[in-house]
Length: 62
Image 1 (tube, one colour):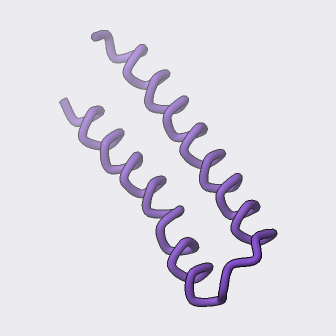
Image 2: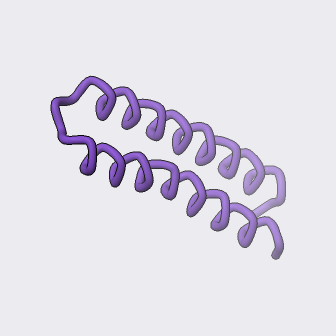
Image 3: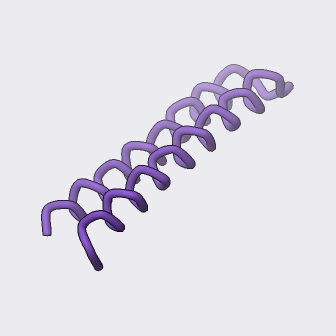
């Protein structure tokens, strides 16, 4: 795969990941879950974006 396509796909993946995290935060914020469960979910949603960043970094290293 050419480097330009890798960069383009990586940027799209990061944008969608950040968007999904924001949607998740919005859904959790308006839910009726208990505080402890909201706290757990608020930890899980950013981890998706961090994992996507790690994959993008490894993809661009090659």
